[in-house]
Image (tube, rainbow, N blue to C red; front, side, top):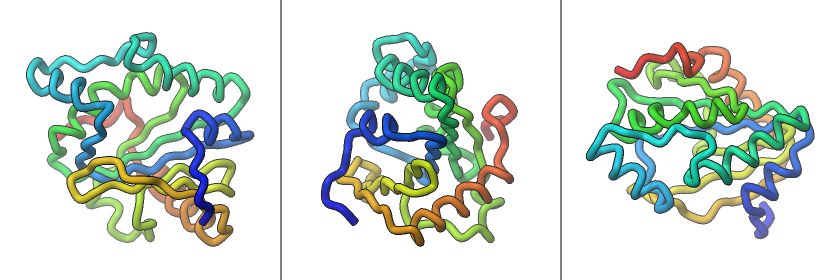
Length: 175
């Protein structure tokens, strides 16, 4: 594993064909989302406007990738009934979809027989893995980059198995 972890803009900007992201936690405590999550918990209102100040850096990046022909897919494995955080995530996912991401949800009970990596990841062009690490309470921890072919194969196989079983965002009903 290399020691240099590029920014998401650099990592995704280097994608030529595909960028896939697998999320497997039921709660994230990412500092940049704290205010938006607190607002949602207090009001039930989530920012799903892909052109808002909150979303714009991400949606501009994704729109640029999709315009270059890069397929961007995100799959989320979730426990049901879902956590408040997953409800919040689901409420804002329309912004991801509007930017061009394809998003699917897989109930955890349907993932029991899928061999999954130990961490969330981004897989770029089926060759470069960015492992996303989190602390026990869900805060972001430093990530890692790997170009190990075995790790890339594990991630590609896991992602495709999840994707095949998962429900498209517009069809997934929160329970």
